[in-house]
Image: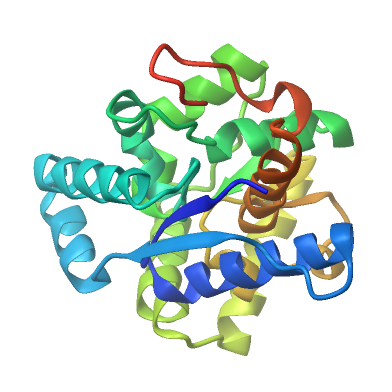
Length: 247
């Protein structure tokens, strides 16, 4: 079993979900006392969030690359960035490594195609929904167009993520608000829901809506276990890079 490198702490709430998903998946696959081989580097999220708010992506890039390289030096044989938002820097991080990086958008796109969805709603932080690289990757590599919420509703979701979920608060009122937004998007033609922030699985699940839900945290963790055990991450979900990464 390969050592899975987790670049986490963005926030630790979702990193804990990753850890649980990884170990449950290995237990399901191998049984007995088996568990995942994991190396976790957890960043200080207050610092990360401040740089995000300032638009200081050079500081974020430096922190991400240095942390990813530390995981590789520590023995990680693959890298998982435990944050949709920070995949904005995934290509640059991958180029700084010789180990594979599993890109969350590629893993999610494979699941969307498997479900037959074509216009999933992307619910995520402001940084992710406004990041053209995420949308471009879905469209250019996977032929998918992600629906978006109106701008003021995206701000509502962003606030719920940072002010509540990242601080461990799951508010019933926020769940109802998000379900209302999903219902409106569904009426407008959205045929799936991407939980495009790794904390959103704390708030919403497949049992809440009548369209396919793509839990990026769970999908990413399952793909990491696939790769750790077989050397393949959900078949065609990624492609080899010159430096050895998947993006």
